[in-house]
Length: 154
Image (tube, rainbow, N blue to C red):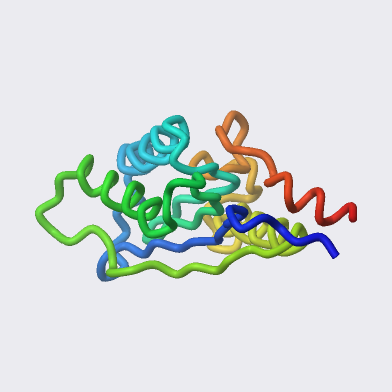
């Protein structure tokens, strides 16, 4: 049986806005979150495999860099966004929800859940139409982690 290396840490994460405020219903706020995700991805802090920015929460699938803990990756996202927003109010609920993704089937299910979330919430007719999602044309994301593909074949 194929076993992923120890550094193969891919997670489905959810960050919820404080008091479920709908801060991401403003396009410019969504663009700021996209900037935070892309900047940290470009700095090699994590691989970003899927994301969606919903009005009151954010879902991502990411793999932290080998030298970055999951907690630090979350801090880069939540803290980086809070810094850009410069709000006097709390931006995020404390903590986050995490699920470690252990195989290709789970990875694909998490990605589909994320990309279909705006359709389920009646924000668009097709995942391809939602601009603040990895399903949108031109979204910068990383491929499926190679250990999932290798594990699926073997």
